[in-house]
Length: 297
Ligand SMILES: *Cc1c(COP(=O)(O)O)cnc(C)c1O
Image 1: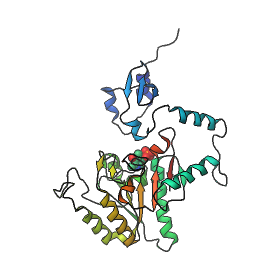
Image 2 (image 1 turned 120 degrees about the horizontal axis):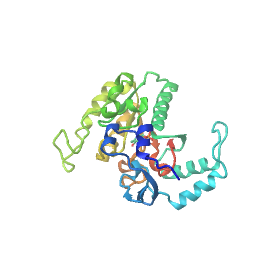
Image 3 (image 1 turned 60 degrees about the horizontal axis):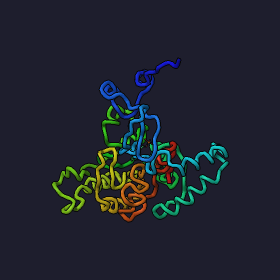
Image 4 (image 1 turned 180 degrees about the horizontal axis):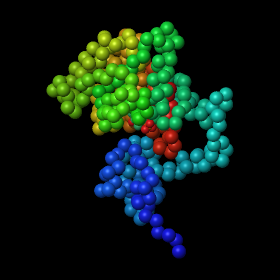
């Protein structure tokens, strides 16, 4: 006789779920997913759920996509992993080469990491190291948008403006510059999309005037701020920001982790603004949720 296991009780006993209040589990115990196909998840009783959050914005090509499954099975029987220092492999070179054709102009060097937050950390380190090695070690600050979200590690939290995630950790975070006023849905200037003249950009201008010379990079979620509540803002903001970054010698980091791979109608969201960033981060849709992987380009 097989023992009957209460998996929800076992879950409660062993698992800390991310980005949620565990007390909510008392009212909504986690749904136990058994298998998936296309846009549907199925629980252990076979009940289907339409995956409208695309498993946290990652799943762009359907669950258990036969083509991806086959490619992964082929790969895992050939080579599962190798040290990437002084060694290389064709799949990484091929992926980089193909992405270089698709990405905004000028983005041609690829460094691989294992999640979105790590890609952001790498971008911040790269920006600082670039300035350090080109005679500007004083450029140590970072700038970011109102209601920004760039991940959960300490550096990424430091360029996040959402206290839900960062609040308690403030004493540990870098002293960065957070622009104010970018909120089209509740525009503090009382404008609508039709009458908007990017009034909120004045906060960025003031910040650059004050801190532009000590700033390494400015990081943005392009056009779409996901974690803030799927907030959209006009591409013209990014066009202006690119020009301001150039004027002050500040690097522009484009966090396409959520918005990339077609989420906003262009392959990469910054294309709406017709500009290229200096550094671009991608993850989530990059693997369609199949594995933890990210690239800083
Ligand atoms: C999800 C997300 C991240 C963090 O990615 P993780 O893989 O969860 O570390 C960073 N930036 C944006 C815009 C995201 O949506």
